[in-house]
Amino acid sequence: MALISKNIEEVKSRIRNAALACRRDPESVRLVAVTKTVGPARIQDAIDAGLDCFGENYIQEARGKIKALSGINVSWHFIGHLQSNKAKYAVKLFDLIHSVDSLKLARELNRQAKKHDCIQKILIQVNVGKEQSKSGADTQETAELVEAVSRLEHLSIRGLMTMPPYFDAPEKVRPFFKKLAELKDQVTAKQIANVDIKELSMGMTGDFEAAIEEGATLVRIGTAIFGER
Image 1 (cartoon, helix red, strand yellow):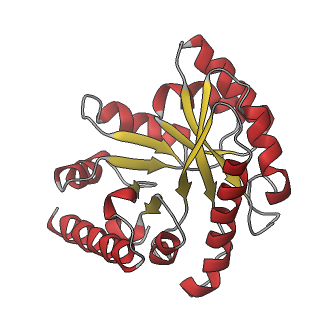
Image 2 (cartoon, helix red, strand yellow):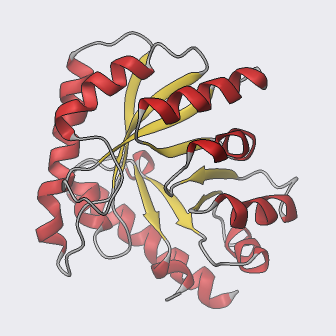
Image 3 (cartoon, one colour):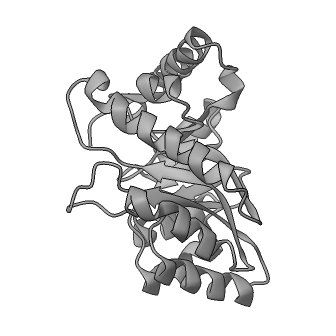
């Protein structure tokens, strides 16, 4: 508990300093604690230390944790690759799905959300690095995908997400963060009905300060809080 609490305070301090350094309100950046492989007891420690937003990568793993911690007022985000056949679970479990990367997936999420008479908040995942090993819409097709998804009545597009190529230096990742921010501006300029692009989900333990400087509003941090997996 003490170590997790100390780590959280350090991460929050770094987020605040990075935001202030680029004249942003630190409150405009939300910390999503990534809890892949982290059990409910340690998540509870993080909640006790002041965290209220958690990101999961796998539906099956998340279901047990969310059930174990039910009744606690926290927000659960899905940040991993989502298959269409798991959409029915995602809609029931998550407040925000970061990784919508195709119209097929969006349509299935919309169908499931309609069953529950709810509006599912989502982000469109963009493959800014054009890596074959990663999911995400092509940058050239993102606006078209946003426009198509915007017509689905039970989905609400809140922003964009990316997982850039891995580099051991934040400055090498920065151009990819900048690209996503530019894409956000381009999509916003189209004034697509029913779309409110405010969120940029980008930045992890090794590069979140650079992401904040480029406009991140959601930073997904696991290792700096819970240690190496």
